[in-house]
Length: 403
Image (cartoon, rainbow, N blue to C red; front, side):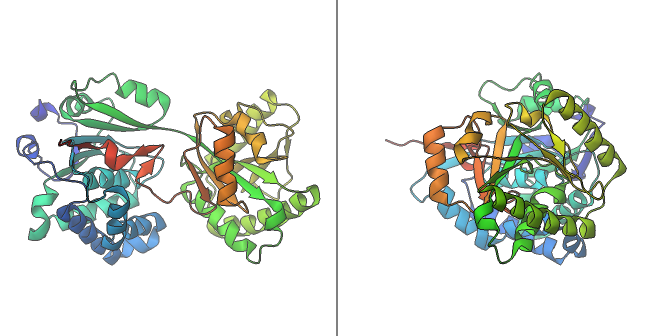
């Protein structure tokens, strides 16, 4: 069937031989070959002038360094473990964050698998830079054998390619919305194969105003929040859409003035608002205003930041969102007040001015249905091998039990 799939654009390699590809052996997680390959990829990316233009590509290159991978190996693959890759992992990756395909690929590599990655058909310079580095690395004799363990391709989702690669893979990773996931699941897997799905999620941010008003570098907090949101145009699942303020009334009002002023200065200097985003924000507000009582749009000088003040937290607040800088904000009496709205749609909670011990108590006491990550402001986009509650090294490999 492979020879009938003429609608595939092979980004790497130019000529793909499925018969040879499936003959590649499984490896143990964090193999010497895998770490050497990714470290070499990091070096090539760091030499590419284009990497300096894109912080997300530079961050990916930094993640692939040998020093970082060895630290991850200590955490995710203890010496007494005996595991092996599952075989072929087929990745169907999204367009909303250009480098997601690369991180998904790294998870497959580090867990000991061969990888077929569907890169978004929506072109991006970040994807081009990474794919170019993969092609460059394949010319190195030291890494040619390992390069044969992966394939990067692009095609329209209407192609029969999804059905074909689904039929031969051992794990299928799907990134996308609920409808996309359901549509892809119509393509059958082999009996022992399974899906790992990363659906679109909702994220929020909690700020303790009592602490924030004494922050000596509030502009750095705003910079971290900018990176969490505007770098990916608020399209990433990790990007907060809801801001929860804690603290006394006066401190909250003072903290808001400081926080939003510093953020506005950053956005005005660094962000280019697309016309469609301005329209989307207006449409989102009208929709939210019709469905919600007592909301108010804070007066702002332009369209760069929209702040929607809430008088109550509704359980369906996750429905009201937009990209390009659209935030609902609410003053809560305590952390416990937010537990009632958290469903399994919630992924990342970023914060400022709250101790780790308080979060541990919050989770233990409220046992929220959602939230897989709690991280400081500025850390939401940091990639982890634990994603949406999955330890991806364990999930994408199999344990060999010897008695």
